[in-house]
Amino acid sequence: MDTIRIELEPGKYKSSRPHYWLISLLVVALLLFMGLWYGRRYLVKRLIAARYDYSAAINTIKLPDNFGSAQQQQAEWTDTYEIDSGIIDKLYVKKDFNAVKDHLSSILSSPQNEITSQRLSRAYSLLSSIEKDENYDSINSRLAVLDEWCLASPDSHIPLLVRGYFNVAYGWHYRGGGRAKGIPSEDVQKFREKLELAKADLEKSLALNPGDPNSAAALIEVAMGLNMPKNMMESYFQKGAAAQPWHYNLHYARFKYLMPKWHGSAKEMFDEAQACLDMAVEYPALGFVMVDAFTEAWYDRRRLNENNKNVEVSDTEWAIIENVYANYFKRYPDNVYTYYNFIYRAYTVRKYDKALEQFDLVGDNILTEVNMAQTRWGTVEEYNKARAYCNALKGGDLMKLEKRYEDSIPYFEKAIQYDSKSVTAHYGLALACWNLAAKNRDTSLILKAEASLLKAHEIEPGNAEVNKQLNALQQKLKEFPVR
Image 1 (tube, one colour):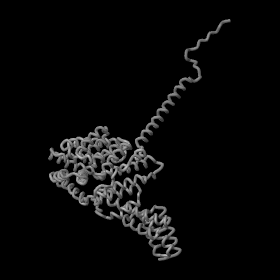
Image 2: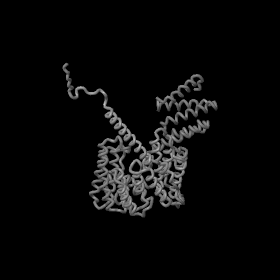
Image 3: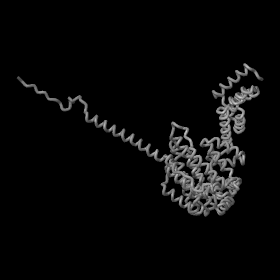
Image 4: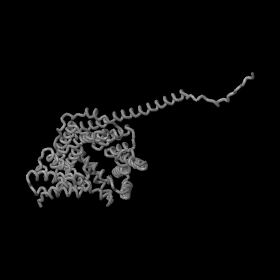
Protein backbone atom coordinates (compact mmCIF):
# COMPACT_ATOMS: atom_id res chain seq x y z
CA MET A 1 0.00 0.00 0.00
CA ASP A 2 1.36 3.35 -1.01
CA THR A 3 1.88 5.93 1.69
CA ILE A 4 0.23 9.27 1.10
CA ARG A 5 2.48 12.14 2.04
CA ILE A 6 0.90 15.49 2.88
CA GLU A 7 3.06 18.57 3.16
CA LEU A 8 1.68 21.66 4.85
CA GLU A 9 2.71 25.03 3.59
CA PRO A 10 4.45 26.97 6.31
CA GLY A 11 2.09 29.45 8.03
CA LYS A 12 -0.96 28.41 6.03
CA TYR A 13 -2.74 26.71 8.88
CA LYS A 14 -2.22 28.80 12.02
CA SER A 15 -3.76 28.00 15.35
CA SER A 16 -7.01 29.87 16.05
CA ARG A 17 -6.15 30.03 19.76
CA PRO A 18 -5.35 33.61 20.94
CA HIS A 19 -1.90 34.63 21.97
CA TYR A 20 -2.53 34.98 25.69
CA TRP A 21 0.89 36.43 26.34
CA LEU A 22 0.21 39.37 24.00
CA ILE A 23 -3.15 40.13 25.60
CA SER A 24 -1.58 39.94 29.06
CA LEU A 25 1.11 42.38 27.98
CA LEU A 26 -1.51 44.84 26.69
CA VAL A 27 -3.49 44.57 29.94
CA VAL A 28 -0.39 45.22 32.02
CA ALA A 29 0.51 48.22 29.83
CA LEU A 30 -3.03 49.59 30.17
CA LEU A 31 -2.99 49.18 33.94
CA LEU A 32 0.41 50.81 34.15
CA PHE A 33 -0.80 53.76 32.05
CA MET A 34 -3.92 54.15 34.19
CA GLY A 35 -1.83 53.98 37.33
CA LEU A 36 0.52 56.67 36.07
CA TRP A 37 -2.39 58.83 34.91
CA TYR A 38 -4.38 58.66 38.12
CA GLY A 39 -1.23 58.80 40.20
CA ARG A 40 -0.24 61.99 38.45
CA ARG A 41 -3.68 63.48 39.02
CA TYR A 42 -3.53 62.51 42.69
CA LEU A 43 -0.07 64.02 43.04
CA VAL A 44 -1.15 67.24 41.33
CA LYS A 45 -4.17 67.49 43.62
CA ARG A 46 -1.96 66.98 46.66
CA LEU A 47 0.47 69.62 45.47
CA ILE A 48 -2.36 72.08 44.81
CA ALA A 49 -3.86 71.30 48.22
CA ALA A 50 -0.51 71.98 49.88
CA ARG A 51 -0.06 75.19 47.91
CA TYR A 52 -3.52 76.44 48.88
CA ASP A 53 -3.46 75.19 52.48
CA TYR A 54 -4.90 78.34 53.99
CA SER A 55 -6.01 76.75 57.25
CA ALA A 56 -2.47 75.93 58.30
CA ALA A 57 -1.19 79.35 57.21
CA ILE A 58 -3.96 81.34 58.92
CA ASN A 59 -3.58 79.44 62.18
CA THR A 60 -0.09 80.92 62.60
CA ILE A 61 -1.25 84.54 62.34
CA LYS A 62 -1.07 86.66 65.48
CA LEU A 63 -1.32 90.33 66.29
CA PRO A 64 2.00 91.84 67.40
CA ASP A 65 2.49 93.16 70.92
CA ASN A 66 1.36 96.76 71.49
CA PHE A 67 -0.76 96.62 68.35
CA GLY A 68 -3.07 99.61 68.22
CA SER A 69 -0.70 101.75 70.25
CA ALA A 70 0.29 103.97 67.33
CA GLN A 71 0.36 107.65 68.25
CA GLN A 72 -2.44 109.69 66.74
CA GLN A 73 -1.37 112.03 63.98
CA GLN A 74 -3.54 114.42 62.02
CA ALA A 75 -3.15 114.05 58.26
CA GLU A 76 -4.42 116.23 55.43
CA TRP A 77 -5.70 113.37 53.34
CA THR A 78 -8.68 115.15 51.86
CA ASP A 79 -6.59 116.99 49.25
CA THR A 80 -4.07 114.23 48.50
CA TYR A 81 -5.60 112.89 45.32
CA GLU A 82 -7.07 116.18 44.09
CA ILE A 83 -3.59 117.70 43.91
CA ASP A 84 -2.15 114.71 42.10
CA SER A 85 -5.01 114.38 39.61
CA GLY A 86 -4.18 117.79 38.08
CA ILE A 87 -0.90 116.54 36.70
CA ILE A 88 -2.67 114.25 34.20
CA ASP A 89 -3.66 117.19 31.99
CA LYS A 90 -0.28 118.81 32.47
CA LEU A 91 1.40 115.71 31.07
CA TYR A 92 -0.91 114.40 28.35
CA VAL A 93 -2.65 117.59 27.20
CA LYS A 94 -0.24 120.47 27.87
CA LYS A 95 2.94 118.36 27.70
CA ASP A 96 4.39 120.46 30.50
CA PHE A 97 7.07 117.88 31.27
CA ASN A 98 9.07 120.09 33.61
CA ALA A 99 6.04 120.92 35.75
CA VAL A 100 5.15 117.22 36.13
CA LYS A 101 8.73 116.23 36.90
CA ASP A 102 9.14 119.07 39.41
CA HIS A 103 5.90 118.11 41.15
CA LEU A 104 6.92 114.47 41.53
CA SER A 105 10.47 115.40 42.52
CA SER A 106 9.18 117.70 45.25
CA ILE A 107 7.17 114.85 46.79
CA LEU A 108 10.15 112.49 46.58
CA SER A 109 12.54 115.02 48.14
CA SER A 110 10.21 115.86 51.03
CA PRO A 111 10.59 113.98 54.35
CA GLN A 112 9.34 110.47 53.60
CA ASN A 113 6.59 108.95 55.70
CA GLU A 114 3.52 106.86 54.92
CA ILE A 115 1.58 109.87 53.67
CA THR A 116 4.19 111.35 51.32
CA SER A 117 5.24 107.89 50.14
CA GLN A 118 1.68 106.93 49.26
CA ARG A 119 1.06 110.31 47.65
CA LEU A 120 3.99 109.70 45.30
CA SER A 121 2.91 106.16 44.48
CA ARG A 122 -0.62 107.38 43.77
CA ALA A 123 0.72 110.09 41.47
CA TYR A 124 2.67 107.52 39.44
CA SER A 125 -0.43 105.33 39.33
CA LEU A 126 -2.66 108.18 38.10
CA LEU A 127 -0.21 109.07 35.33
CA SER A 128 0.09 105.48 34.11
CA SER A 129 -3.42 104.11 34.59
CA ILE A 130 -5.43 102.81 31.62
CA GLU A 131 -9.21 102.66 31.71
CA LYS A 132 -10.74 99.24 31.06
CA ASP A 133 -12.70 100.50 28.04
CA GLU A 134 -10.01 102.87 26.74
CA ASN A 135 -9.39 102.32 23.02
CA TYR A 136 -5.97 101.55 21.61
CA ASP A 137 -5.71 104.83 19.68
CA SER A 138 -6.02 106.75 22.94
CA ILE A 139 -3.55 104.47 24.72
CA ASN A 140 -0.97 104.70 21.93
CA SER A 141 -1.40 108.46 21.78
CA ARG A 142 -0.56 108.75 25.48
CA LEU A 143 2.34 106.33 25.06
CA ALA A 144 3.75 108.60 22.34
CA VAL A 145 3.68 111.50 24.83
CA LEU A 146 5.64 109.40 27.31
CA ASP A 147 8.16 108.54 24.60
CA GLU A 148 8.59 112.25 23.93
CA TRP A 149 9.04 112.92 27.64
CA CYS A 150 11.72 110.24 28.00
CA LEU A 151 13.67 111.74 25.06
CA ALA A 152 13.37 115.22 26.54
CA SER A 153 14.67 114.13 29.99
CA PRO A 154 17.24 111.36 29.43
CA ASP A 155 18.91 111.88 32.82
CA SER A 156 15.77 111.71 34.94
CA HIS A 157 14.41 108.45 36.30
CA ILE A 158 10.85 109.82 36.54
CA PRO A 159 9.70 109.62 32.89
CA LEU A 160 11.23 106.14 32.59
CA LEU A 161 9.40 105.06 35.73
CA VAL A 162 6.06 106.44 34.50
CA ARG A 163 6.51 104.83 31.07
CA GLY A 164 7.48 101.55 32.75
CA TYR A 165 4.33 101.64 34.88
CA PHE A 166 2.31 102.55 31.79
CA ASN A 167 3.60 99.55 29.82
CA VAL A 168 2.81 97.27 32.75
CA ALA A 169 -0.77 98.59 32.68
CA TYR A 170 -0.79 98.27 28.88
CA GLY A 171 0.26 94.62 29.12
CA TRP A 172 -2.52 93.85 31.58
CA HIS A 173 -4.95 95.69 29.30
CA TYR A 174 -4.14 93.12 26.59
CA ARG A 175 -4.17 90.13 28.92
CA GLY A 176 -7.10 90.94 31.17
CA GLY A 177 -7.31 90.15 34.85
CA GLY A 178 -8.54 86.55 34.70
CA ARG A 179 -6.58 83.33 34.93
CA ALA A 180 -4.22 82.40 32.10
CA LYS A 181 -6.39 79.56 30.83
CA GLY A 182 -8.51 80.72 27.92
CA ILE A 183 -6.55 83.88 27.12
CA PRO A 184 -5.76 84.06 23.36
CA SER A 185 -2.11 83.33 22.63
CA GLU A 186 -1.69 86.60 20.71
CA ASP A 187 -2.82 88.58 23.78
CA VAL A 188 -0.40 86.64 25.96
CA GLN A 189 2.39 87.50 23.51
CA LYS A 190 1.51 91.21 23.58
CA PHE A 191 1.33 91.06 27.37
CA ARG A 192 4.86 89.69 27.56
CA GLU A 193 6.17 92.20 25.01
CA LYS A 194 4.84 95.13 27.01
CA LEU A 195 6.28 93.75 30.23
CA GLU A 196 9.69 93.32 28.61
CA LEU A 197 9.58 96.98 27.54
CA ALA A 198 8.57 97.95 31.07
CA LYS A 199 11.43 95.89 32.52
CA ALA A 200 14.01 97.75 30.43
CA ASP A 201 12.64 101.18 31.48
CA LEU A 202 12.29 100.29 35.14
CA GLU A 203 15.78 98.85 35.46
CA LYS A 204 17.18 102.07 33.96
CA SER A 205 14.99 104.09 36.33
CA LEU A 206 16.22 102.11 39.33
CA ALA A 207 19.84 102.59 38.27
CA LEU A 208 19.36 106.36 37.82
CA ASN A 209 17.73 106.79 41.23
CA PRO A 210 17.94 103.85 43.69
CA GLY A 211 16.33 106.12 46.29
CA ASP A 212 12.87 105.82 44.71
CA PRO A 213 11.49 102.38 45.73
CA ASN A 214 8.64 102.63 43.22
CA SER A 215 10.96 101.39 40.46
CA ALA A 216 11.72 98.23 42.43
CA ALA A 217 8.05 97.73 43.33
CA ALA A 218 7.06 97.91 39.65
CA LEU A 219 9.87 95.51 38.71
CA ILE A 220 8.44 92.93 41.11
CA GLU A 221 5.13 93.19 39.24
CA VAL A 222 7.04 92.62 36.01
CA ALA A 223 8.80 89.61 37.54
CA MET A 224 5.41 88.20 38.51
CA GLY A 225 3.98 88.57 35.01
CA LEU A 226 7.07 87.26 33.21
CA ASN A 227 7.42 84.24 35.54
CA MET A 228 10.85 85.37 36.65
CA PRO A 229 12.48 83.27 39.44
CA LYS A 230 12.09 84.19 43.11
CA ASN A 231 15.73 85.16 43.48
CA MET A 232 15.21 87.93 40.90
CA MET A 233 12.09 89.11 42.71
CA GLU A 234 14.02 89.14 46.00
CA SER A 235 16.85 91.10 44.36
CA TYR A 236 14.41 93.82 43.31
CA PHE A 237 12.80 93.79 46.75
CA GLN A 238 16.11 94.24 48.56
CA LYS A 239 17.05 97.17 46.33
CA GLY A 240 13.75 98.88 47.08
CA ALA A 241 13.92 98.10 50.79
CA ALA A 242 17.37 99.69 50.96
CA ALA A 243 15.64 103.00 50.20
CA GLN A 244 12.43 102.49 52.24
CA PRO A 245 12.08 99.20 54.14
CA TRP A 246 8.47 100.09 55.03
CA HIS A 247 7.35 101.10 51.53
CA TYR A 248 3.78 99.84 51.08
CA ASN A 249 3.77 99.23 47.32
CA LEU A 250 7.07 97.36 47.58
CA HIS A 251 5.71 94.94 50.18
CA TYR A 252 2.40 94.64 48.37
CA ALA A 253 4.13 93.70 45.10
CA ARG A 254 6.12 91.00 46.90
CA PHE A 255 2.92 89.78 48.56
CA LYS A 256 1.20 89.44 45.16
CA TYR A 257 4.17 87.58 43.69
CA LEU A 258 3.95 85.06 46.57
CA MET A 259 0.23 84.37 46.13
CA PRO A 260 -0.54 80.69 45.42
CA LYS A 261 -2.04 81.61 42.05
CA TRP A 262 1.28 83.13 41.01
CA HIS A 263 4.63 81.89 42.28
CA GLY A 264 4.19 81.16 45.95
CA SER A 265 1.96 79.33 48.41
CA ALA A 266 -0.53 80.13 51.14
CA LYS A 267 2.28 79.89 53.69
CA GLU A 268 4.63 82.20 51.80
CA MET A 269 1.86 84.72 51.19
CA PHE A 270 0.83 84.81 54.85
CA ASP A 271 4.46 84.92 56.00
CA GLU A 272 4.86 88.16 54.05
CA ALA A 273 1.54 89.42 55.43
CA GLN A 274 2.67 88.61 58.99
CA ALA A 275 5.95 90.48 58.43
CA CYS A 276 3.92 93.49 57.29
CA LEU A 277 1.57 93.17 60.28
CA ASP A 278 4.56 93.19 62.65
CA MET A 279 5.78 96.44 61.04
CA ALA A 280 2.30 97.95 61.21
CA VAL A 281 2.81 98.91 64.84
CA GLU A 282 5.05 101.70 63.53
CA TYR A 283 3.72 101.89 59.95
CA PRO A 284 -0.04 101.20 60.18
CA ALA A 285 -0.71 101.10 56.43
CA LEU A 286 1.32 97.89 56.10
CA GLY A 287 -1.36 96.09 58.09
CA PHE A 288 -3.59 96.26 55.01
CA VAL A 289 -1.40 93.59 53.37
CA MET A 290 -2.79 91.16 55.95
CA VAL A 291 -6.32 92.32 55.11
CA ASP A 292 -5.64 91.54 51.45
CA ALA A 293 -4.25 88.14 52.43
CA PHE A 294 -7.49 87.24 54.21
CA THR A 295 -9.51 88.50 51.23
CA GLU A 296 -7.43 86.47 48.76
CA ALA A 297 -7.82 83.37 50.93
CA TRP A 298 -11.57 83.94 51.08
CA TYR A 299 -11.86 84.15 47.29
CA ASP A 300 -9.68 81.07 46.77
CA ARG A 301 -11.54 78.98 49.34
CA ARG A 302 -14.81 79.83 47.63
CA ARG A 303 -13.34 78.95 44.23
CA LEU A 304 -11.81 75.67 45.38
CA ASN A 305 -14.91 74.61 47.33
CA GLU A 306 -17.30 74.58 44.40
CA ASN A 307 -19.86 72.60 46.38
CA ASN A 308 -19.84 75.19 49.17
CA LYS A 309 -20.06 78.79 48.00
CA ASN A 310 -20.89 79.96 51.53
CA VAL A 311 -17.30 79.97 52.77
CA GLU A 312 -17.11 82.83 55.25
CA VAL A 313 -14.37 84.87 56.89
CA SER A 314 -14.16 83.52 60.43
CA ASP A 315 -14.80 85.70 63.48
CA THR A 316 -11.09 85.41 64.34
CA GLU A 317 -10.05 86.63 60.89
CA TRP A 318 -12.54 89.48 60.97
CA ALA A 319 -11.32 90.52 64.44
CA ILE A 320 -7.77 90.86 63.03
CA ILE A 321 -9.09 92.88 60.07
CA GLU A 322 -10.95 95.25 62.40
CA ASN A 323 -7.85 95.63 64.55
CA VAL A 324 -5.79 96.54 61.49
CA TYR A 325 -8.20 99.33 60.59
CA ALA A 326 -8.52 100.51 64.20
CA ASN A 327 -4.72 100.71 64.43
CA TYR A 328 -4.64 102.75 61.22
CA PHE A 329 -7.47 105.12 62.16
CA LYS A 330 -5.82 105.84 65.50
CA ARG A 331 -2.84 107.24 63.61
CA TYR A 332 -4.76 108.77 60.69
CA PRO A 333 -8.33 109.57 61.82
CA ASP A 334 -9.02 111.95 58.93
CA ASN A 335 -8.39 109.54 56.07
CA VAL A 336 -11.91 109.15 54.73
CA TYR A 337 -10.58 107.18 51.73
CA THR A 338 -9.57 104.38 54.04
CA TYR A 339 -12.99 104.45 55.67
CA TYR A 340 -14.43 103.85 52.20
CA ASN A 341 -12.07 100.92 51.74
CA PHE A 342 -12.98 99.53 55.17
CA ILE A 343 -16.63 99.54 54.11
CA TYR A 344 -15.61 97.75 50.92
CA ARG A 345 -13.84 95.04 52.92
CA ALA A 346 -16.82 94.51 55.20
CA TYR A 347 -19.19 94.41 52.23
CA THR A 348 -16.99 92.04 50.22
CA VAL A 349 -16.77 89.43 52.98
CA ARG A 350 -20.51 89.76 53.77
CA LYS A 351 -20.22 91.62 57.05
CA TYR A 352 -23.22 93.65 55.97
CA ASP A 353 -24.16 95.01 59.41
CA LYS A 354 -20.65 96.40 59.86
CA ALA A 355 -20.72 97.83 56.32
CA LEU A 356 -24.06 99.52 56.98
CA GLU A 357 -22.73 100.99 60.22
CA GLN A 358 -19.77 102.49 58.33
CA PHE A 359 -21.95 103.70 55.44
CA ASP A 360 -23.93 105.75 57.95
CA LEU A 361 -20.75 107.00 59.65
CA VAL A 362 -19.00 108.19 56.49
CA GLY A 363 -22.08 109.39 54.63
CA ASP A 364 -21.36 111.40 51.48
CA ASN A 365 -18.01 112.89 52.50
CA ILE A 366 -15.94 113.74 49.38
CA LEU A 367 -18.27 111.47 47.38
CA THR A 368 -17.15 112.44 43.88
CA GLU A 369 -16.13 110.35 40.88
CA VAL A 370 -12.52 111.57 41.09
CA ASN A 371 -12.24 110.63 44.74
CA MET A 372 -14.08 107.31 44.47
CA ALA A 373 -11.78 106.30 41.62
CA GLN A 374 -8.98 106.22 44.21
CA THR A 375 -10.85 103.75 46.41
CA ARG A 376 -11.66 100.10 45.85
CA TRP A 377 -15.21 101.01 44.86
CA GLY A 378 -14.04 102.65 41.66
CA THR A 379 -17.24 104.63 40.99
CA VAL A 380 -19.94 106.41 42.98
CA GLU A 381 -22.52 104.15 41.30
CA GLU A 382 -20.92 100.97 42.66
CA TYR A 383 -20.64 102.51 46.11
CA ASN A 384 -24.30 103.52 46.12
CA LYS A 385 -25.42 100.11 44.85
CA ALA A 386 -23.69 98.53 47.84
CA ARG A 387 -25.32 101.07 50.18
CA ALA A 388 -28.68 100.15 48.68
CA TYR A 389 -28.05 96.43 49.03
CA CYS A 390 -27.05 96.69 52.70
CA ASN A 391 -30.08 98.83 53.55
CA ALA A 392 -32.38 96.44 51.69
CA LEU A 393 -30.89 93.48 53.57
CA LYS A 394 -31.39 95.24 56.91
CA GLY A 395 -34.96 96.05 55.99
CA GLY A 396 -35.53 92.46 54.94
CA ASP A 397 -34.22 91.13 58.26
CA LEU A 398 -36.45 93.47 60.25
CA MET A 399 -39.47 92.54 58.13
CA LYS A 400 -39.02 88.77 57.82
CA LEU A 401 -37.22 87.78 61.00
CA GLU A 402 -38.65 90.27 63.50
CA LYS A 403 -41.95 91.24 61.84
CA ARG A 404 -41.04 94.90 62.44
CA TYR A 405 -42.70 96.15 59.27
CA GLU A 406 -42.80 99.83 60.20
CA ASP A 407 -39.12 99.88 61.19
CA SER A 408 -38.12 98.15 57.96
CA ILE A 409 -39.72 100.73 55.66
CA PRO A 410 -37.05 103.50 56.13
CA TYR A 411 -34.31 101.02 55.17
CA PHE A 412 -36.08 100.07 51.94
CA GLU A 413 -36.67 103.75 51.16
CA LYS A 414 -32.99 104.52 51.75
CA ALA A 415 -32.05 101.67 49.45
CA ILE A 416 -34.25 103.13 46.70
CA GLN A 417 -32.71 106.55 47.30
CA TYR A 418 -29.24 105.10 46.63
CA ASP A 419 -30.27 102.78 43.79
CA SER A 420 -33.60 103.57 42.20
CA LYS A 421 -33.36 100.45 40.01
CA SER A 422 -33.04 98.00 42.90
CA VAL A 423 -35.82 95.43 42.41
CA THR A 424 -35.00 93.99 45.84
CA ALA A 425 -35.64 97.35 47.52
CA HIS A 426 -38.90 98.09 45.68
CA TYR A 427 -40.16 94.55 46.29
CA GLY A 428 -39.20 94.68 49.98
CA LEU A 429 -40.90 98.05 50.44
CA ALA A 430 -44.06 96.67 48.83
CA LEU A 431 -44.21 93.65 51.15
CA ALA A 432 -43.51 95.77 54.24
CA CYS A 433 -46.27 98.25 53.34
CA TRP A 434 -48.69 95.45 52.50
CA ASN A 435 -48.12 93.65 55.79
CA LEU A 436 -48.31 96.89 57.78
CA ALA A 437 -51.53 97.87 55.95
CA ALA A 438 -53.11 94.56 56.90
CA LYS A 439 -52.01 95.03 60.50
CA ASN A 440 -53.12 98.68 60.87
CA ARG A 441 -55.99 98.72 58.35
CA ASP A 442 -54.22 101.53 56.50
CA THR A 443 -55.48 101.73 52.91
CA SER A 444 -52.86 104.30 51.86
CA LEU A 445 -50.15 101.74 52.50
CA ILE A 446 -51.89 99.26 50.18
CA LEU A 447 -51.63 101.78 47.35
CA LYS A 448 -47.98 102.42 48.23
CA ALA A 449 -47.35 98.67 48.08
CA GLU A 450 -48.99 98.49 44.65
CA ALA A 451 -46.87 101.42 43.37
CA SER A 452 -43.68 99.72 44.57
CA LEU A 453 -44.60 96.42 42.93
CA LEU A 454 -45.44 98.20 39.69
CA LYS A 455 -42.02 99.89 39.79
CA ALA A 456 -40.28 96.56 40.43
CA HIS A 457 -42.22 95.06 37.50
CA GLU A 458 -41.21 97.97 35.28
CA ILE A 459 -37.53 97.43 36.11
CA GLU A 460 -37.63 93.64 35.74
CA PRO A 461 -40.78 92.49 33.89
CA GLY A 462 -39.76 88.84 33.94
CA ASN A 463 -39.38 88.54 37.72
CA ALA A 464 -41.79 85.74 38.60
CA GLU A 465 -42.06 86.55 42.32
CA VAL A 466 -42.77 90.22 41.68
CA ASN A 467 -45.44 89.33 39.12
CA LYS A 468 -47.02 86.81 41.47
CA GLN A 469 -47.33 89.32 44.32
CA LEU A 470 -48.49 92.10 42.00
CA ASN A 471 -51.28 89.91 40.59
CA ALA A 472 -52.33 88.87 44.11
CA LEU A 473 -52.41 92.47 45.35
CA GLN A 474 -54.36 93.75 42.35
CA GLN A 475 -56.87 90.94 42.78
CA LYS A 476 -57.33 92.05 46.41
CA LEU A 477 -57.87 95.63 45.24
CA LYS A 478 -60.60 94.44 42.85
CA GLU A 479 -62.36 92.65 45.68
CA PHE A 480 -61.93 95.46 48.18
CA PRO A 481 -61.46 98.72 46.23
CA VAL A 482 -59.72 101.43 48.25
CA ARG A 483 -59.10 104.06 45.56
